[in-house]
Length: 263
Image (cartoon, rainbow, N blue to C red; front, side):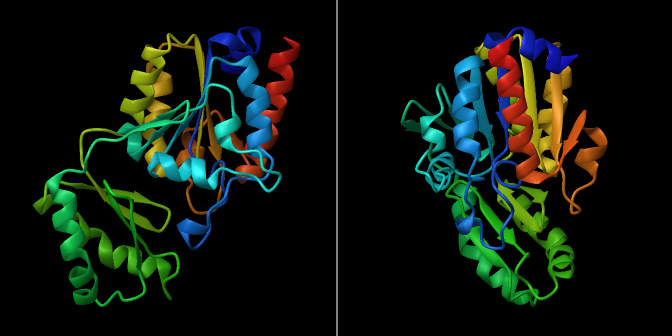
């Protein structure tokens, strides 16, 4: 079993985690997201035992570091050996250094056209999050979040396609981003880079399904964990374990840390 392999040989384990909905509760305004208050300290303890703590997210990597500071002042940047792969693996933060290539031309074109497209569809209460290399259209704060999401899905997919982008759907969000990489690609490459001997991955949204597939396709002892919610059930159906949101993720990591350090 994957958990047994991690506990028996923690120095060979990569522990991968999404950020929003996994380490941080989902909030109406993504700029207000903050890490669960206990997560940095728990990860700092776990980071001493395992090979690598990896945060794999669609967010810019720098925002994970910025939003990853707990009220007690402990932050994700304090986790030993932490690596953040942002924008689905295109960006990398490690040891205080950020590497990020420039965005493709299609993103700039979509950025210019998106306000007019939203207005023409009559969706005036969606919120656009500019990630630099991607644009995320959030409907959580709309009067009818589900209706706005469904109204926008096909037109935004068409807009993205005209400029060589794709749409990544999520929890009341449609992200227009470059094709060619996903969390599965990023996780597979990282596991090979680190010569991992086991892997655990925790996510909460549809974009994490590719990472689940990467865990299962790696040939390593692995565990897939869903940070559960009422909004996404497909991930829970595919997970080895389901926990109750970010608080449940922290409880799992705390238990794993204790077992790994004792083992």
